[in-house]
Length: 567
Image (cartoon, rainbow, N blue to C red; front, side, top):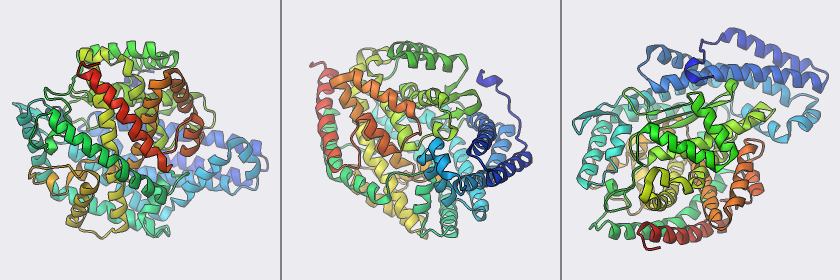
């Protein structure tokens, strides 16, 4: 069904909660596994129904945050979802505690019960009020950023549109665009601090109500961390500081020479070539035609998937007034339909939408045949492998978008992927500090961020910027407000994706086969197990980071020679 035709009506939550309660009672009284599995299937129908309606509402709200109807419906879901979480947890509690659990595990799998137990640990009805307030604050933060209407270049632009000017080949334009962004954040600094203060207070309160020492432990449970701990993540971050940060500092010095600059400033950070970064050619329609050719040729699976996306209007990618910033892929369960949301701005980031978000969407499309509905979803660390690796597997088709500049793009893509990892680790460590010290003041948080910048990005020079240069850069990162502890998933997945990029150089066919099998598995395995089966080295292995740096540096040298026409 085309997205525009998908019906939406507010769900009858009273009836839904009543049905969930009856199903939980049914599991408690059941005397056969067959009966319990039938009840689980009935629960899956309710679950998919409500998440289908939520997805439609969420997408339409993000497309136009000024639409009064969907704004109100979004508020409704902010309030109702914690109540539905209670109904779900009540059902899972009966499944976990069933005397027939041993038999059920033979059908549902041991991992199903591991994940269900995490749901139980992470929730109690006594935190519903805090959850509702957190949802409300997160929505307000998103709307605040979407409300930006900035005068620049003789136009009114939002933050997504301004981002195109931030990577202009003209350094003065870049500097002015960054200054314009700073104006917006300075004007809203007080509100940004107040919202985050309240979010930290609420999350800490929730965690303590559940018996945790801090929100860190609760946050890991919320993220379904079922195969590694905060200690493992710290070891990974330490490896990034030891091996990757020094390598990137060398790259920074070389980039300074390449750009013929006395000193690189923060508004130069995303620039890789003196005459500017490569830009995709053509209109959005022409880019989608190129995307279709790319996925037609990549594999039978990607051809079928991309045709389905186009036929059913499952993209909204043009930046416009009132549209929320950023990009995402959302699943619409009852239609087995992924939806891709983005903000095209004429930069290479537009191509990332056709690769990164399509990696997410491909997983959603391919997981339609998984019978146990909970396994269709995977943890974010696995999900980001799907997206980040797809960016690399489409390398042979970048000429369709960049023409003669495609080699430049491929060099920039890999360099940028490596440069992202310390930033992502910095976001993660910052959140550990914040939630281990929930009474920090806004100034103390900003000081903590500045200290981390010295460790992870020692080359960074903010050129006296009055907001971002004062430890405020993290406040533009929506995940920190809305999805705490998500960001390390990007870093772990990026290591796996770069591993695939290195593997592609040696045996592209084998690498693609591994990726496709990994994607089809969705959430049926833990992160550490799925990458082991795929033939990838774990990011938690001490030698992994050094191998990535070695392999990536060799590939970067090769790509740079091609980019400069020296091959």
